[in-house]
Image 1 (cartoon, rainbow, N blue to C red):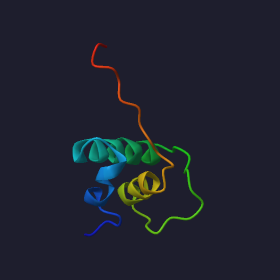
Image 2: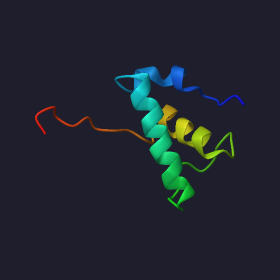
Image 3: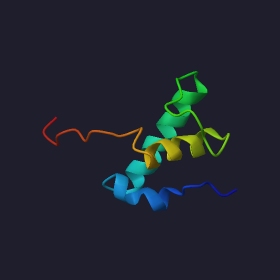
Image 4: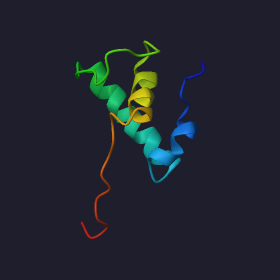
Length: 69
């Protein structure tokens, strides 16, 4: 099973590979629960791959919380 794009290719979209993986995982779960798709066309039908595509196209981003919180 090869996902395209891979999480490693998206390392510049977050502060770490771990963040990319967690973001994609949470988004895939959201899509599985009926969340709206952010793009019209996807290359894959798998939810994790769709999440990675959204990160790749800057449709899905995150905000790092302050360490003081």
